[in-house]
Each structure stands twice: as structure tokens, then as C-alpha cells.
Image (cartoon, rainbow, N blue to C red; front, side, top):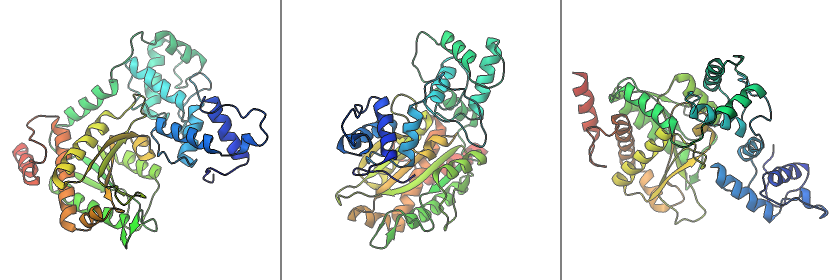
Length: 382
């Protein structure tokens, strides 16, 4: 579909307005002639509010991601049968609700990301088997009724956190053997942000290679999500990480802003803004944020939950790091300095090491060096 924006009109706008009205974000068009199919200011404000709620980029535009999220928001558990379809996985708020209820009941449905995948099907089959239902992996009326009957009276906690932490604990503190997917943003004909001949894709490719070298030196298996002249979409990058059995995905980007004064570093992890989150992704984003702001002096723009496809569709924790603004002169000068990119690469490696240490034998932020990481790996190997 084409991107819709304020001033547009037609059946596609009318469909989106109807969805927004059903979600209670705009009043029904009523009898105002032509109002139903016009993308006006009120509709743009409703879209921005919806995007903020769903962890999307709040640009007020209706692109593929926003349209998908609007469609997903219309589904409620019990409104349709849910099953694992390999070629075209079912997505929606009803899937997320199913995942959350299975998790609350002790079944490992994975991250509640609203995508009905193999792990959700396995958890559903286990629930059906334990409850004496037909074990078909399909969430139909009988299964929905059982889920509602068994929903716990007390809710809360973070069941995914315990499972993710246990997986990290079992994998051990050593980096050797850890499989990390490094995702340099954009690529090929898509240069990303481009200012005064400086391209985001080129800088992130160079940074990715520097990071790859350091990771390999520590014994990690570092995989690049793309070639230098390639630009796969986010779902393809996520699929690559899943098929590789990655332990972690690190997506590298630089930002842009209309204001040349905007500058700094920001991190992003999967999260809906309503409680569902990748707990280790959140932890990894925080570790990278602290290490890099301490080492580089970049302004700390914080870490934030988002539902971008790379973050949402990966089975392992995934983090996107926006390293500086190429539209800011000072940030751009830093990013074009190879020595600065070396500092960033070292800081990211140290942050990854801290994640697997789980707080044991740690050192103050900014004081752990790459040499310390190598020494720790050698000591553990003996």
C-alpha cells in the first residue's frame, strides 16, 4: 500500500478512519459529507497517539508498519481460530493475549510479540495435553474457554525474564561460542542518512567490521546480516538471525533530525509499552547505552521499547543502537573518525561481556577494557 498522510483521501483513508473509530481513537465520521474519507488533522493526531502506544515511529503517517499494527489491534482472543501457519504466520493482539495467558500459566510461549510461531504452537499443545483437550495446536472456542477458566486471579511478574536469565546463566559467562548477529543498517542503494557525502550505511558497515573482528578475537561467532552492497528488509534480517540460532542481535544505525542541534546516543529493544518486553534486550540496551555514553561523551538519549520488525520478530534478544546524529556537526565529525569507531566497537564488546556475566566479577562502567575481556576469556579457558 502507498503511504497515507494528512491531506489524502479515498477508500483507504476511510478504512483506516473506521479502524481508528472502532479502537476509540477518533469519533465516528457521522453525517459530515466527505469526512469519512479525508485524512485531516484529527486523524493525524490519532495516528500519532496510536503509534506512540504501539512502540512505532510517531510520524503521523500510515505506512506498512502502522497499517499492520492497526489491523492487529482489531483482533480479540476468541474472535478467530489461531494456528501456526509456516508460510504466513498469523499476527494480532489476540495472538499476544494467547501468549501472555500461556506464559502466566507456566507454558513457555516465548516472547509475547503477537506472532503465532512454532514456540507458541508447542506451548499451546502442551496446555491442551495437560487440560485434556484435543491436542491440535489450534486455539479454537474450546481452548479459549479453557484458557479463560484457568486464567490466574493474580497477574503480574515477568515470567519471560526468569526464562531468559536462566538461558544466559546456563550458557555461562564465557564469550567463546556465543553467536552474535551484527546488523549494519541500510546498505546497497539505500544509504540511510546522508549528509555532506557521509553515508550512514558506509559508516555502519565499517563499524560492523571493526566489531566483528573484536568479537572473533574473544571467541564469539560473529555473523553479518548483510553484504556491503545488500539491503535486506527487517523481516529478512530477523529471519537470518533466527535461522542462525543467534544468541543476540546488534543493529547499528545513526540518526537524523530536522534540527541540527539534535545529537546523542539512543538504544531500542522490543517492548509494546504496555508491559510486554524483551527483558534481556532491555538489559543489553541499557548496558550498551551506559558503556558508550561513558566512553564517548555522546549525549545520553536513553533506551526505549519499540515494536520494529527486527526487534519484534527475532527469537533472541535484539538491540538497535542509534549512534549519534549525522545531521549534527559534532556527532558527524566523531563518527567519521576511525579511532572513534574503534572506541564504540570496544564499548559494545564490553557491554556484551557484562550481559553474560550477569553482574558477577563486574567492574565500574567505562573501566572494563577490551584487554580485560580477552584476559577473562583466557583465564576461563585454563
